[in-house]
Image (cartoon, rainbow, N blue to C red; front, side):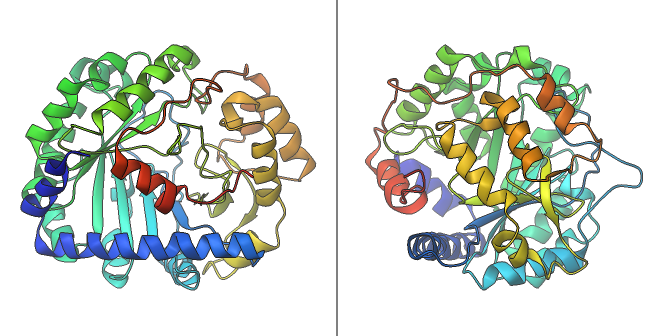
Length: 398
């Protein structure tokens, strides 16, 4: 890891943002250790982290998006979100990814952040609604890190997002976050069309120049009613992406994150390990954001969340099924077998468009990110230590 990546956080971010980031690092360590103990000792299951898609409302209609917008919008209530956070606290889980749609449409979002100063939130946003006023509010809090989605430079952003102004508006949101002293990240879903411009040192240096502190690389997962499967990465590009991450982590002046590989370069799935699960805007408790099927739905205050995780069988059976299929994404790699598993467990389509099962049936199995025999271990000692001892330290695939 380039020490400059840490130095920039210390010099750019406000003291409040730094304080909450350090608290998150310590609490995250305790969260993972508590999760490991529960798994090892066979105690009641609860994931280490939760991803909450709080609304299906959005101002964009991006190609390959799995979120179906409705009128009126579906959204988790403030009572449900608070119930989730209160329940998670019992299991030392204090980190929450906040997704949409576009989560900034939710009227109670800031109230949720203010009510929970001991929690840490990663806010996934397209950045087009992220302005100086919002950045100032988040700066007062310190417990939110904005993660702004940039899916390509101007031409690719226009194609993917379906609008001409998205790239410029996302950059303006990014500028607002940086100027407010927030710990600011950028995310990208890497596909064939944006690969060359986003998987490059020039792009990383561009982000550093904009004041970005970390980037989270995702692999494009073709899902939803318009999956654009031809845009998915092939084996050669996945290997190139992995090699790029490993090499750039040593010298880039920002943190480079992923959740696909362990320290030895073996493919991983956070859902399969039970590390993280997802809650949809309609209250569906799902395996992951793109797995739009559920065996249980939240009640009005999320008081049944523990029961869904610990008594309902679908999630546990999906974890077993996923590990039996190798180390890949079962939605992409084994869609037909997955469909059989969902049906045999009485799962309900939770997509909001009543089309997820049909989409699985029509899918052609495809390559994802598991490359047996082609593993590329981490070169950075800091990242190896972090993945071995902090994030992927448990043998959940064993």
